Structure formats: structure tokens, C-alpha cells
Length: 139
Image (cartoon, rainbow, N blue to C red; front, side):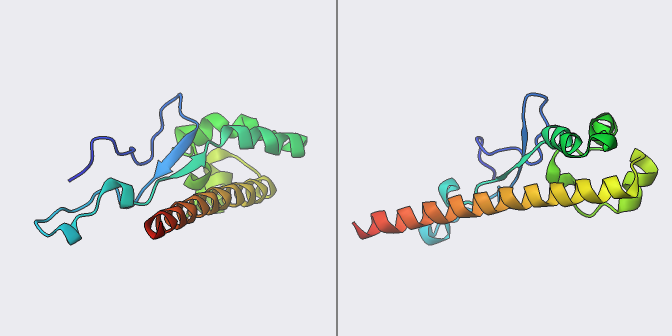
């Protein structure tokens, strides 16, 4: 059963600037209350930034690489968020997108670092919520 207010996985609305990813958006219910998992117990989705502002930042850091020219091609191939580059071989970016190897490595390193920061931020928020819940249980 899914909740009606759950976030869509991998959203890509034009107005959205982040992608959400939640592997546990479904939860089970049973007649035994201890088996019921409420929505507030579920992990919150990770919000990943879009590639657009990071392509611009990379272009400012390395103006000769002109990363912005690859934006349309990346979007056309479904790479809208920094986490979407995971598992894609460098050859895809050189052969399909048309980037140089040096530009690819620099971009991928940056995107992976930004995705990891988003994951750490979400993990920190989750731990803070759990700690607050534990503290309120003690009161």
C-alpha cells in the first residue's frame, strides 16, 4: 500500500530543482500493531540537486571546457540530477555527449561529491530526528 502524499521517486518536473529517491516508499500493514509502519517511520527521500547550476559552476572554474554546452544533451539522455551519472561509463560521455576525457573526469568527480554531500545531509537530518524522538520519549 502506498501513501497518497508520498514523494514521487525520480521526479523531473521542470519547476523542480532536486530529485528525490526513496527506496522504502511502500509500507505494510497487518492486524498486529507492532507490524504497522507509519509514514513518519519511513526514511525521507534524498534531495539531489540538478546538474544545471553545477555545470555553470564548473564552467566558471574551467572556462575553456564550457560545460553548459552539454546541458541539453545530458538532459536528453536523462541526466538531470547529479546522482544520475552513477554507473555510467566515461565512454558514454565522450562518445555520446561529445565531451573530452578530462572534462568528463572533472565533471563526474564534482557530481559524485555533490551527491555524496546530499546523502550525508539527509543522513544527518535523519539522525537528528531520531535523537529528538528519543529525547521526547524520555520526557
